[in-house]
Length: 412
Ligand code: NIG
Ligand code: FE
Image (cartoon, rainbow, N blue to C red; front, side, top):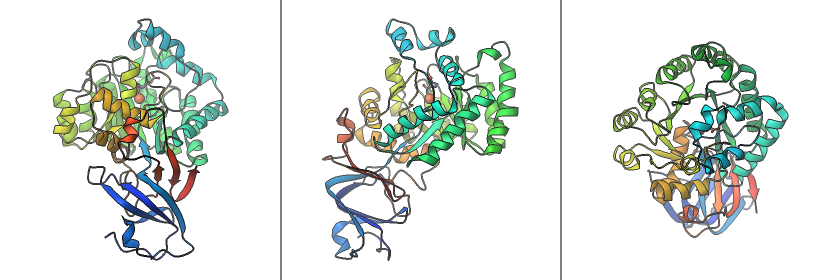
């Protein structure tokens, strides 16, 4: 029997099966029901336990035997940018590597050029379309990083766009400052000068404006060194930001161990992470955010060490990494499919990665990522036979209804 029914109920979900994503498992309740009061989940249990207690004026959502899951949490995206990099996609098809393109002025920097040149309105309009696309894929919580500005004005422009998207969209958006995404060419001969700009000018200003909750760094040969990362993270922590790291995507810079020692929420990518660093992640409760879209688009061959993460009980999140270069992927179901087929994750692991573990990677597990009493009523009704269908079907998002914080954001 579920907990005692609350006095006031606004919405009941009935005739459904629940995948609650609690206790590190899909945790199915067949023939279940969920009650929503204001913007929270107020009751979860078997429908038969309701036993005629539903008041006449309650809004009923009849799920017609469908499945209710928590909304997806996409914990790593670079969703605000201008321009396109399909030319680089073609260059890679002709044999150029991501690093080669980056070292000759393309890659992240080509998006920086286009983004610096674009108006705030244009960046917003493009971003809004992408947010709406992700919402229709069942994503109800989204992280977006800056990082295509690399100067104070453009980084703030991007963070302001993210703030506006959060205000204007039904889904919840967490903003991350990624000023240290790559070294801008104007600092090519003075990398320390750029680190000073990030730590002494950008970070305090972002804090003063209160427009990001976390700070990220791309720790890599084509990004920043471990020492440079350390300087940025120390300052970020002093200012009270959460920290997250692009770690060990293309080589082992030993960034994950640093991030773990400094109390990072997550380390992301991790194809080249060492056993020693993974042990540090486990010790410091760091979430592994896995990004199979980038692995796929860059035709990488070294997989992240999934078995090691399993053995060390490191929670694994999966995310789109939506960006114009390494992962122009706008679908969480496709990413879960890739997590299964490319990284050998189970459907259950992929589903946990797209829900509760994504929430953990953002520090939002107390309110997001599972169907539990007291959490935000972020619920998606799927027309599927079993949860694994969401990893198996490709090109479909069979959604009947999306509720975010108690409000219906989409209904068929
Ligand atoms: O997560 N690795 C760094 N950042 C992005 C790629 C950004 C880009 O290529 O524009 C990533 O893969
Ligand atoms: Fe990324």
